[in-house]
Length: 577
Image 1: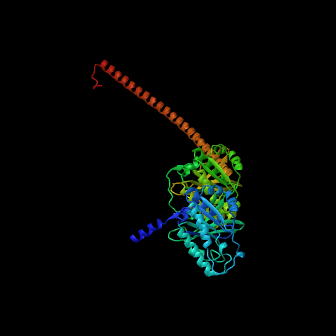
Image 2 (image 1 turned 135 degrees about the horizontal axis):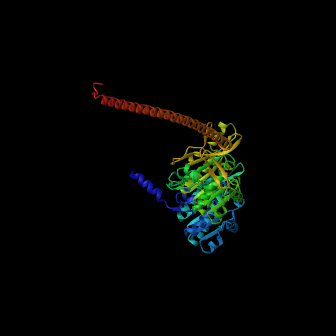
Image 3 (image 1 turned 120 degrees about the vertical axis):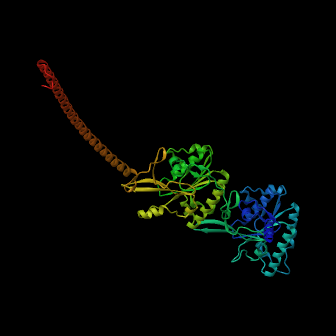
């Protein structure tokens, strides 16, 4: 355990000279080895001279380390003119004593191998330039020109080792450029063995699209990135995209942000997580761009910035189309909250697109990035390369805490089952990288096509599993209530017809109920009448019975009275009678 700790400390404390070049310091974990030679090799036009020149210029301007550029091919004036377009004012740096550009013309045809050959004259001249400004950095461009006329390999090996040792003894951080050889990193095949750090630049053209890649072949005494990294040469100079060094260490947020469609937020249990990735996929005309525009509109409405990367439509066309659905995006652009960047995917290689996105994100600092559509990237490379590029883009945006919205066009050809399978697949297989996947579908029923939406997945969210019909009107996207008929989800005219049929059936049942009610009411009234009649007859019979009882009681009273009267007349007791 103690030995491991010492080794780790040694790797971390290896002196390094930062290059100042975006991405390169990251993959080298600090820059080039300080006080040691670094070899930059590659074919013609790959950017060796520019990389080494930028290393010197940034060292002089950012890190207060003067430098010497020793050229064997281009003259000093040519070099100054070539890098002026990048904003490098070499003459001003020379006037300030921060940089020296020197040129030594070497014609291989004028070199004749006679007697001993050494680089003592070069050491004297280079040593003088280093001492004159106190240089900390030195560039030799390009080395094979110096040995181009020599055939004695023993002399080459000896002088190369001597040159590299001399540079180390001077304590300067040296960069040596060399042309790539046939089957070797350099033409001599020796420089890579005596260099402490070897960087290989590659400029390749695949299907008429150029790509530039960088690889650290070796780096003594320290860990470093070992993959191929895309790099870009543009008006800002040399920049490396260390995308493969990204890992799954990004921070996550529990905050929910709106999609711009209220009822979709409800389906997503309150919206999407900030900093998550969203995929909107569907066939042509299914409403993908309209939904992504709602994302942009909602972002700007929160007073946050949105970067809209359009690879299919011009910004003016997007803004015009969105106005027809009630989304006016021009005011957000005028306020600086919305920025459109439009280009054709085939215009650049995938690495250049990715690097440009990095630059736009770093410059604009958006909270939401919309890429519409990602399916067009296949035109700029293979599906595997496009998938790799999108993987890097997703990781980069997650590391920045940016909410990413990707639009993907899916195929809808073939049978219904085949179309459904194609709808739930992406051309580049990035669905596994996505946190929330919203699928838009064209539902064909009753001779017409209508739009349906459902959430295929949403990590960490208790989302709805319902297919919702939605319409795009002058008020934007509106999700309809779920309507399921006998054959499943109904949309459009089929839904209207089914609703009409159900309404007619409901009315028929209402009429039948009313008819039954009226019949029962009639029966109730007839029964009530019968009850009244029977009650009247009963009361009549009761009255008659009471009358007869009264008459009987009256007759009994009269009989008693008559008997009493007769008894009185006879003077006889009642019992006698």
